[in-house]
Image (tube, rainbow, N blue to C red; front, side, top):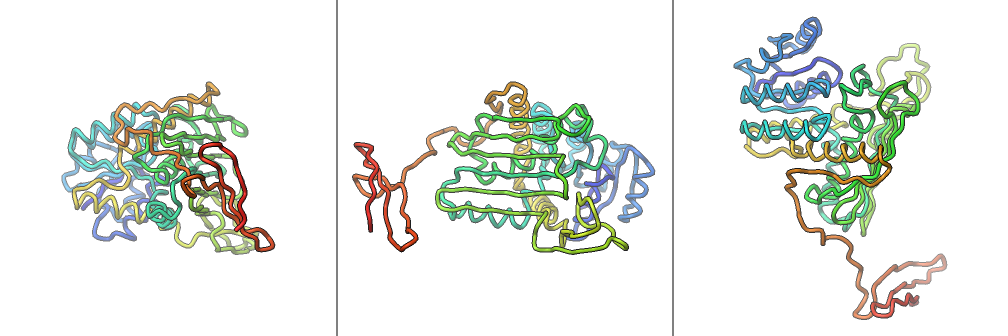
Length: 395
């Protein structure tokens, strides 16, 4: 397949590095940029035969099969509309929209046009995430009770991120979209997000949007998804996930401390890793950023989905649900209350009876806990089903 890239900036280059370096059967063919000089430079750097400052010209190029959107958030809707009109499969960077209403328009467009809408949520394709999710789905952790994801760094690269009108918000819409979808995968995409409690504040930067936020998403089965996001974290990019189930726990450090430490005086230093703030002292490089951040696996899934006429792992519908949760987070941050998640087109489970189940010990008792004490004694803590009495039984 031949690919058109809409955008020529930071994320477009990450995508291009993955596309030319990993899945070599597909070719970058054209690039659009609002700045023709940037389009020309991008085309030269990656060997593209076509570049233009006309979005419609690039999307409607007869040789293009797939369009990748790596544009500012306020331009996603118009770009998806152009792809739908041209009948071209479209892969869009996160977040899908600035609001759920925008995301829903894009979802409706691609479904009406009969094209694939792939949601480029790279952090749901990282090797560590894929391995941990397989363990969760295989039952290793039992029933998932809580999933937390944190992303924090010193702030985004481009000026438009800091403009609330262009981006749709601050750290929540930029980073929270990752964290929300990570937790949603662990809890189960078919489980409906019900309501959100969120705190957000502008603590450091002179902007209209939030640069710090913490939120909790309550799901229909009682599970909680938690996100922590910041544009004020100093020391690089902190990506961590935690999952707690009835039978186990997962802790993941995705980026900042991964077992690769290096010291440098910085005299000949260069690029270390995304969002790294220094090239001197103790540094934490990443062996293969494109791979570790999930881009390779993401694009493999997207293009195989097109070839096999199936949905990718992350779809425009997923992007829409994420935007709906973000809308509720912003409403909660303003009201200080739990706010409902409004999803007009819920496609998952509709029952809410798949929550708490207590461990049985026997016909009379529930099992609260079994433990071994420091001196080797074993004991059970049990609760009588009828009387509610809690007892200890030595083994």
